[in-house]
Image (cartoon, rainbow, N blue to C red; front, top):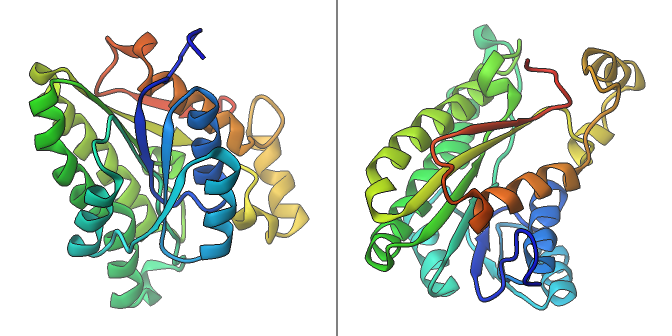
Amino acid sequence: MRGFCSLEGKTALVTGASRGIGRAIAEELAAAGASVVVGYRSGEQEAEEVATAIGGRAVQADVSDPTSALALVEAAGDIDILVNNAGLTRDGLLARMSDDDWHTVMETNLSSVFYTCRAVARPMMKARAGAIVNISSIVGVHGNGGQTNYAASKAGIIGFTKSLARELGSRNVRANVVAPGYITTQLTDVLPEEATEAMRQQTPLGRLGAPEDVAGAVRFLVSDQASFVTGEVLLVDGGLGM
C-alpha cells in the first residue's frame, strides 16, 4: 500500500460510484489504501455491493440538489479526496431539445460539481491539503452533434476546475480534470455494433477504453506522485483528441 500512488490513510468521496467508471474509481482508490465513500443517487443494491467489496460506505444523495450534496459531503467526514463522477445524458438535436433536457443535464453534470466542491473547499483549505478530480469528457473538449447540453456541461467542468485550481493552489489543494474518450460502460453497451465500431476506428489505439483506464488516471492525480499537478486536463481517450 505504501508504494507508488499509495493513498493509505486517505478518505475519498466518489460520486456516481455505484457502477461503470465511478465504480472502477472507487475500487481503484480503495486498492491504493483509501477509505472510500460510495456516493450514489439510485441503484442502492449496486452501491452497497461496491461498498462491501471495498470495505467502504455507501451514502445516497442527489448531488444535483445543493442541500443533498452538502449532506453527502458532511456524511463522508474529513475528506482528503473528492472525485466528481456523477453524470447523465439527455441527447437530442438543439432545435428539438426541451428545457427539461437542458436543465437536467446541466444540474446533474455541472451544478453538482459546484455544490460538492464548495462544500469541501473550506475544510481542505483549512487542512492545507486535498485533491479534487472532476470527470469531464472528450465531448467537452471537441463537441459532438446531438449533445449540446452534455458538451456544455462537460466543457463547463473544465473551466470551473481550472479556476478552482487557481483559487485553492496557495493552500496546497489541487484540482484536476480527467476527460475520458469512448469507454465501455452500460451506456455504450446499448449502442448498435456499427456505432461502436465507428468509435473504435476513430480511436488511434484501436479499441474502446475500459473504466479501469480512467480509474488509474484518477488514482495518479489524487496521489502524492502528482503533488505538482493542478489545473490540468488529462485526456484518457486512446489518442482520439490529439
